[in-house]
Image 1 (cartoon, chains in turn orange, brown):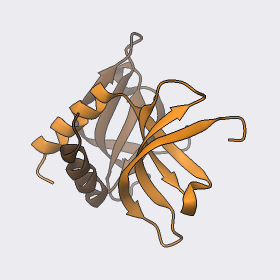
Image 2 (tube, rainbow over the protein chains, first blue to last red):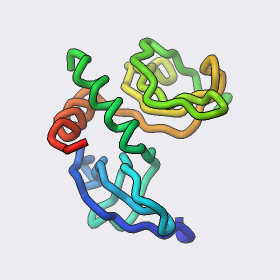
Image 3 (cartoon, rainbow over the protein chains, first blue to last red):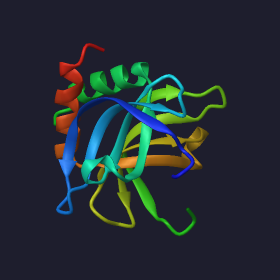
Image 4 (cartoon, each protein chain N blue to C red):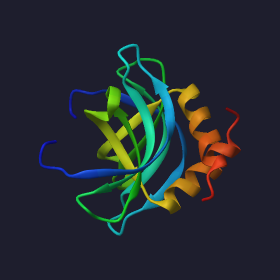
Length: 73
Length: 73
């Protein structure tokens, strides 16, 4: 991951936290100086290391929101 | 990915589709015969190939839903 530059523009919130302190977070992140995207990913304490994750556009996030609201969670 | 067994228990919906027909989908998937988890991932047409993605528990999905509802999307 050393070659990837990123900047966390906004920390929206954590979905969960593991016993070792890793958090699954929703953030708004700019990767390599590009336009920021929403991102769901695991992070170590203090956001030092990142795990696997996905990026989502605003449109995808809206659709996800509507989908989740229609589910009986 | 050849060694991973999975079964799509429920196809909840697609968040987007790429020009090549890959879809970012929310599914309920059982990996290696274990208890099914929610999963956001890219899939090729007919779900033949999978891309990177994340798995989410019901609790994480609930939190994500509440978080998205509080955002001005």
